[in-house]
Length: 194
Figure 1 (cartoon, rainbow, N blue to C red):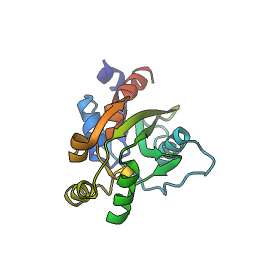
Figure 2 (cartoon, rainbow, N blue to C red; figure 1 turned 90 degrees about the horizontal axis):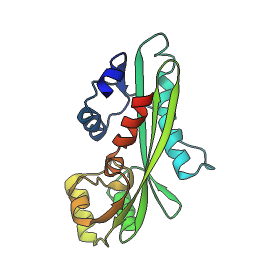
Figure 3 (cartoon, rainbow, N blue to C red; figure 1 turned 90 degrees about the vertical axis):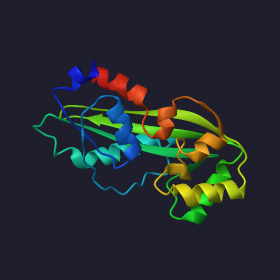
């Protein structure tokens, strides 16, 4: 089992996201939370999946020296939302959140999470993509959601596990947990062979 494979490691989840923490906990992994702040900027020429991987690797870099000669294994992740060749990050305010949700309204978009797993000897990065289909959203629905759920820490200004996901997402193609913020099935598979 995964717990046996990982028993030689001290696991660090480099994420402040309560959703990622909860998902990793549900996997039965014991871990500590340590995140280092990095400026989430990426080169313009990257495609969507490469952006997510680049950002996950960027979050892992500050740990490289720290884990030398240790049994630490670091997991980092970054989730982006892509629609019509535009990457939607986290909204800065209500106005930006409204604009983002209006872009997603009545359309499908991609949610891509990049993940990096790293110990002192090796590093593995991958990305998982999920298609999400929103029904048409009224301004009242959008404002209700933003006012009650404050989705300012979420890429694309929404959380699938919240009210808007229950009332407005018609279907998804791919991993649900990826949209929550961590492609847990793929992470499990990668950790089993890391």
